[in-house]
Length: 58
Image (cartoon, rainbow, N blue to C red):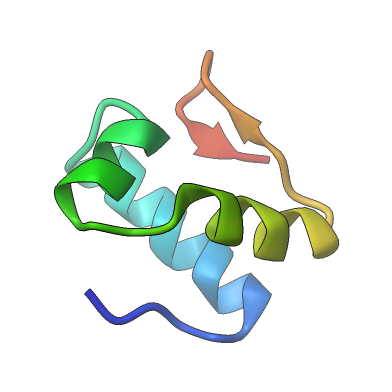
């Protein structure tokens, strides 16, 4: 899976995947062989944090 470089487009992409296909961020990363920490860091620098309760970055 190729991910967008822009953090705001990445935010939208990841949240869409979480909403439509995956029950958790961990599942999304595991099934697509993605670096969870790298994605979290990119999104954190743009002001977003993952909420397990809502299963999305906010």
